Length: 251
Ligand code: 6PG
Image (cartoon, rainbow, N blue to C red; front, side, top):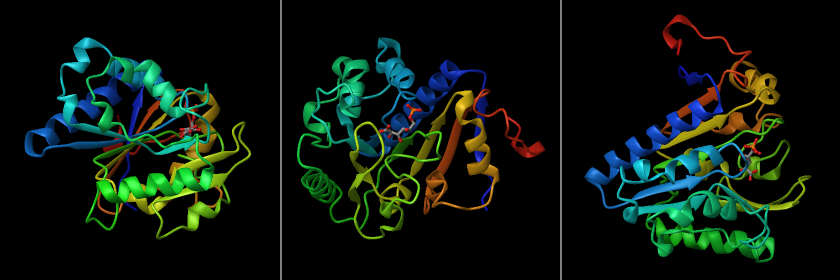
């Protein structure tokens, strides 16, 4: 197994600050050599602090956001103005203040019937990344649930075994049951994947995901193993309280 890049920070705000610096550095470097930077956002509550930091003028000025394209790793099947929408969370906290052109924001149309939303998003991704055989996101940001899920890849989900489609509609036991998610091959094709995990409630699961046996059916976050990209975990002390670090990986 590749040595893990697990970075420990004192608290959630320090994770957000480090993630913002990491994202900005990646985007600035990419845009110095290429015409666009493709970023897939996570939903949930953890990334809110990151998005709020990116909305700050002092951070916003560090990237040419007009050449950034935004996607989502997953979306709840609700309209874009619904309180549970991942798109709405990012819009309210960051995008409404950002200089990202509307045509560069590729949201999942959660207002459509789930199969249609998934098919539409897959079509949009395949048209955008043509002629690639997989979506080449420059960076995918992910969270992890207390059950070890990531994006909307939940334990025992059929999406864990998908090898061809880039996007799937999945029924879950969450408050909004239907969701659209990138599949493991679509995420694992990324150049960089960044997990953000904070809070004591995730400590036990995070320890299992990082140090326990490989059981992706039970711990879907383990299925995220970029084929040729980097995998980085940024965790706060509360979530990382059960982790151990070898001398060469001490933060
Ligand atoms: C979502 C996310 C999901 C999230 C985890 C962690 O749509 O909710 O994509 O995978 O990252 O559930 O959520 P929190 O950050 O709220 O703990």
